[in-house]
Length: 470
Image 1 (spheres, one colour):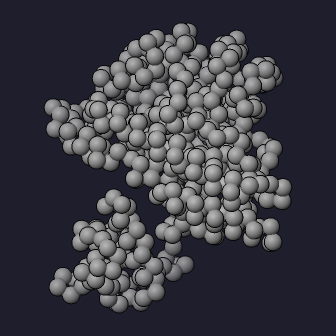
Image 2 (tube, helix red, strand yellow):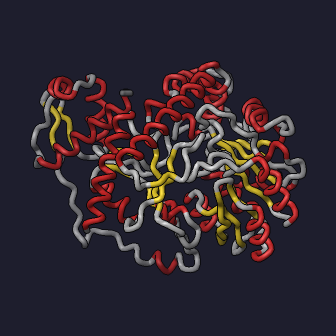
Image 3 (cartoon, helix red, strand yellow):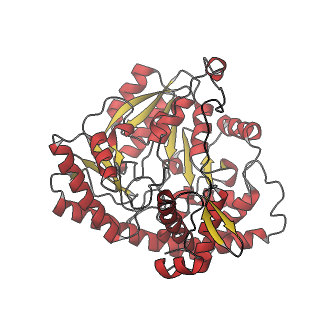
């Protein structure tokens, strides 16, 4: 277990202990905690420092660490912010389906929700080394170009195919912020945006925050249906399609080869942009990963969004947008208005990371781990929950999309699962309109190991039985 995850685990244990004590009670010494929990003195020191910063404990040199006085606030002391309801009138914002997407489960809860890798799957040693080398680069703390560092733009361009050049790349601070920028850049407030159904809830939230109206286009086992896509463009007059053609979230679907050209052609015929969310390019399970749609697009129909965050770390907030024509000039202008540039040290660290053999080794190892975890989860479910039906065994990505049997409702099942100590994602939030059936998204990359996945499935079974008898 990494030092950071050991610290988080110990902080959780100490919080539970503090809740049972009263202010002024002494906590166990560093030596006692080291022996009791098998952690290093550094871990104990970091845990106490975090709790002290949060106001949970006070440390008295030479004496020990004690429970801090409880902070109380009377109703009279609470600030009156009711005036803000009037000031914000007419500027409604509803994060909606994005709520809780990045929440970390509390200690003791097995993580089968969310979309990030467990620390054991991250290239943390390579990341630390890359950050240290980046800090020593000449000009590391200088202002970065608005479009991003030229060598990093070249890396993203090369990954997108020979038709893409560095001048077509804008480096972004991860994927989610770039989604918000793209929705604002590509469509006017109040206009429709076509999306696959189901789709990524963070995209739905970003589209709605930009004032857009998501319109569902059904999928099947080969991805979004081009015939229904053409109908949706004709009926709504939309000028933007958001889709995930490679290892779609949440279903894991890969857009079939015969459809890839069709979907781009349908968007072009409608005079619309196709926003390709290519978040999972580095999350394949060992098979061939198709080129992005932008690789074969020469007239600017496709705008691609990609990121290094998913295969590396939640805090490596580095991504890229690939676009051509006036829309790129618009995006560059928005960059200068929004945030000027992405922090140069982080860009330098990303460049150091992807330029070393360690990155390729990490991606190969990650591919094997994800394939193993996916297969293990599917096999355990087939044995323990045979009436829960994965829509497919994906060849990439971090999740299984599972249809629940009759009698189970997804939100109630997800709530019951958390009560039984396992976090999963209810399917309702992935649909922009009516939900055709009860589904759950089960992650296999956020838990610690295969044993945790097996235990998570066992707890899911308990939760399902509790729902059935409720």
